[in-house]
Length: 428
Image (cartoon, rainbow, N blue to C red; front, side):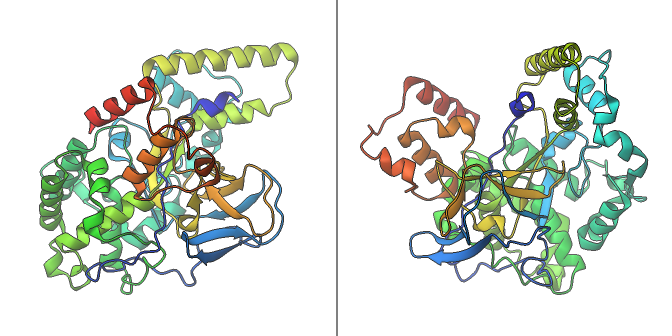
């Protein structure tokens, strides 16, 4: 499908059966029950613990391909810093696009003469009058509901008011340093940590729930820091922490006593291993809706040619950077393990941060449900390359059916893969 050319984010996660080191505190808002964020109850699946992988998601009964297993809102989500800085307009709370499809494609293509037919196929068009902003700092939201939720959870304590665009403000200095150490393509955001801190400041019983997110001890997470912050990660973590202390003065807040340097490292590692990528696009929504219209053959040919031409132009101008991009932490989805031959995938059908776990093949009763933490291109690479990526990014050795079937393959990469890995290393 045409819209499947959109960038597929695979900043997925892995759940480890190891415990945190003693100094790692479990932090987050605990919902009224563990699955309060579920929008579709998980009647078809259940969480089980196995000796090999720890927690995982398993089918209660036979499930057909294309079945939505559950939908879930995140515990916290955030747009990537550079993505927002480059004008990708999204709701601060849910990442829903705030541009119409036409405005979106005009900006991305740097061509303001583009006219899209069938404006009724753009969901944002009818939502424009619901858009709102924080009265104090001007941050944009898709609705009063999202603004109210943000204020209730974290924004009241984080709002910079008139200092929003003041580069010398400690919070902005922290974000700016993060951006200088984490250029696109982005995989995580300091804004997730900032929002968690905001929740600590606002919600009395916030220190209750990261039990659903498990990471290895910090001294085993050096590869995660390297991938997140580059080769000079040790020094950069200390600099980030110093800026964080300057911005939030944790020793002055009873609820922020956990925010020591080791606590900060632990939180970075947790986000690095558990963060799920999000991508939303009003143009992609328009393309999908247009593809479902009942059109005459000539009309279909015309609009398909328009879409193909626009994607070609976008590829020339912005490459793979088509979407509003961010990452989030999901309680139930974080229990889904990886496979290089996945039987399910994460989707965002509502063009916001609500995640739907959907099967991509028939699944038998009792079978484990797995997603891929790697993108489609990476899945086509050699077993050696896949294993290397998973070890470096998620700290585990994959033993899925595909990897086991290729266990006798040479432990080497092709010349093309070596070139790609060298480019990745140079970008760190």
